[in-house]
Image (cartoon, rainbow, N blue to C red; front, side):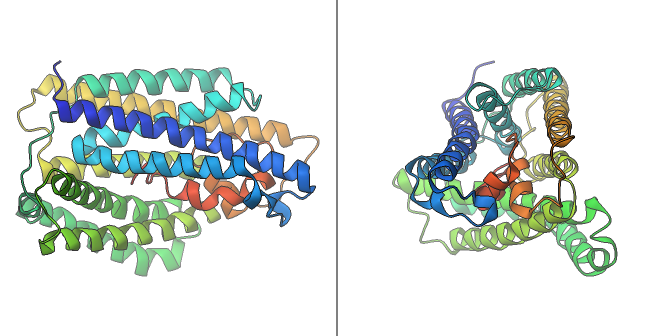
Length: 351
């Protein structure tokens, strides 16, 4: 398959984003351990020595660079290509943890890595070409088509029902309530991020899009969607086991994002049935590998605790770190990375 220049740029940026974000967790954890050794107080028990640890800040900067690369990738490549590739950050984190932190990778975890890589290759090979866009008004036209308005209306109605009816009644007993809200809002946030990224890309190329109110409207939607998404992701991770929340959230978020992108940007128009089926199969393989990685990590954490540690209820920050693919033997050390881990997938698994 011959890739367009934009598609190649988007693929490279998405891969770089996964490398930077996956590596950032390992760098930050090294920084947390070094700070704990110097101060004698770990982050999980109230220590803040990591704030003056250069290695921790290098990890923070690395993550920010990765998030920026992910944001820009949406301006060049379809969301059906960029979003699933976010799972590769889990592989980078797991492999580096195995090599640098000496955290053993379970044999089934290795299989999960292989599945993620194989699925990503299939997705890249059968990815649709990015349709050229010359103005933010074109994106606005796509966003106001009756098909996407129907999707957006359905998402808003479902979110209101989940927030005001199901969340008070069974939000703390059914994992699908909070993750459903996150995933539904996440699909709209990615569409808005792609629209905003396209506007900024055209502006950099000399076609100023900041003069159009549509650009600022997309920016407002991004802010609202991301804040709502993060709020309910916090609730989900604070209520349920990370090994349950992470794969469910990734599956729902990525699936809904692909559906939204296909409706709004018509990503599959012009593709043959075989390419579409192959892309879907690649996505399923990536999902399988992601779930396998999370399950094996949870098993390893449980076995490491058994016999020498009595686990209390995991904190929100620990769960946030775990949700992004980092292995944890000392959950107290990782509380400080909650905000950065939370921004992915959502992000990062999203923007």
